[in-house]
Image (cartoon, rainbow, N blue to C red; front, side, top):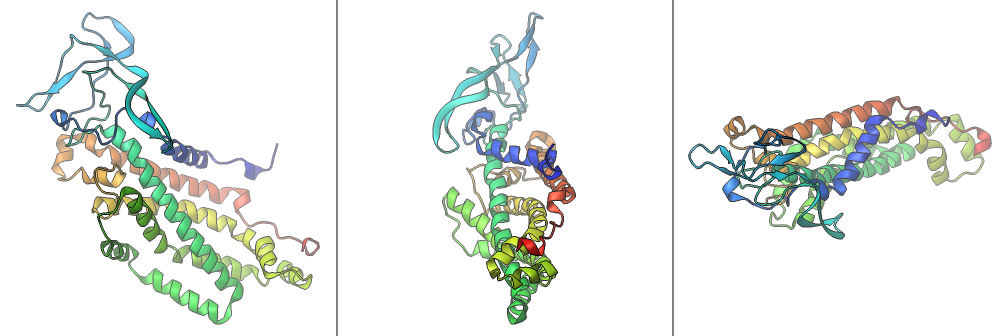
Length: 351
C-alpha cells in the first residue's frame, strides 16, 4: 500500500472528472445550445412515456411530438406518433474539444418529436444543452482566474517573505491596499471601461484575467507568512551554510511548506471566481448572449415572476449550488490530507 497522500479524496476526484467532462461535454447536449424553436418557447420538460396508448410497456422511453397551445401555453401531445428515445443518435454537428467534428449525441429522438429534458427558455432553446455547454466558460474561467491569482500570490508572497526588508514592506503595503478595496466593485469598474463588443473567446480570456488580477492579495499574504516562518529555520540555515543557492533553498526547503496553503487556497478561490464570472455575465459584462454560460442562463430568469410559472428555468441555480458545495468539500478534504500538511523538513545532510 502506498503512502496515504496518494489516496485522493472523492470530492477532488469528482472535481477533476467534472472539469474533464465539461471540456468534452458536447455529446451530452441533446441539441445545439443556440438552436431556437420559437414555436416551443418556454416549453416544459419533455414527458417520457414507458407505456404506449395500447398499454404496452417499453424499456426504451417513448416521446410524442407536441406543440404549445396558443391559448393556454400548455403542451399538447400527439400520441399517434410515438418516437423511441435513441442512444448515440445523430444530431446537430459540433467540434469535440474544439478540434474534431462530430454529430453524435448521447440522447436524441427522431423528428418531428423534440427532446427537451429540462424544457426550453424564452427563445425555444434547449435548456439542458445550454446548461451543459455553458458550464465550460463558467468553470474554466474560474479555474483560469484561480491559476492567475494563485500564481501572482505565490510569486509576490515568496519574494516578500524571503527577501524581507523594504521590499517586504512595499509589497505588503500594496497587498493590504488591495485587500481593503471592494474588489467586486473594482472588477465591475474595470470591466465596464473595456469594450463590450468582443468575441466570446476574448471575453472569456478578459473575464478570467480581470478576476484573477484582482484576487492575488489574499494568497500572497498567506504564502508570505509561510515563507517568513521558514526562512530562518535551522534546516534553511544549514542549507545556506552548505553553499546552496537562494533558488535551491526556496525550491527544496521553503516552498514545500507552502504547498498545502497553495492547494487549499486554490480550492477556496475557484468557487468565488466561478461566482464572479456568473455575476459579470448576469450583468452583461462577461460572456454575452447568444453564447451559453451559467451567467447568461441566470439572466434568463428575469423577471423573477417568470420562474414561478416556469420552474425549469431555475435549473442553473441547482448546478451552481452543487458545484460550490463540491469545491467546499474538496477544500476540507485537502486540508486533512497528510501530503498537504506541513512537509517534513530536510536534514542538514540533504542540503
